[in-house]
Amino acid sequence: MHTARDGNAPTPLPHRQADIPAQTPGATMTGVIEDSPFDGAADVVRGLVSADLGRIHLRPRRYGIKVWFGANEPPREHYEAQVIGADHVADARMLAIEIGFHAEHRKVAENDAVIARLVRAEARWRRVIGHEAVVGGFLGRADDWRRVSETWADPDLGDPELALEIGTRLTDYITAFEPLLEPLLGND
Image (cartoon, rainbow, N blue to C red; front, side, top):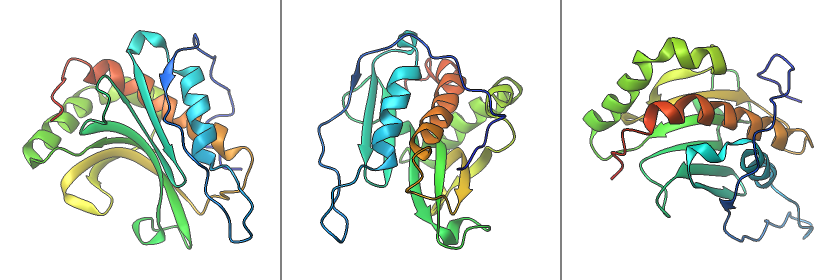
């Protein structure tokens, strides 16, 4: 089990309505259907994120989940947890999970402006997120996209606790960042 927290479970916030598209979990090589930890993480996020933040959208997939507010389609600024290659994480041998916030505007200056706004409020969000979060270039596209995220090296994707851990950690980012980003509405 991977834990990036101090062991204290968050207090659940009021339940909210969320949009989760229907999907078919992937089949393993033996033909057995298994759920992705990101499906379970969607349930956790849906249960923990306050309705006060607005209408939440969740798009879980076999190897990741994208979370955003507002428009029906994901904007250029969103929250994400995803499996990434070991080549992006120094301590990883096989794979890693990245969890956090992405700014994926077409123009570098727009991404930099979003991240600069978060950096100005860093003392506030670090109290929630801690020092695991890295502010920097997007893993795999550092030249143009930006991120505030953390990585977990070589997690056990079959660990039954992983969905809860991903969902609660993604909720930490959402609750820390969304009040800071809400006024931007600069998604293209």
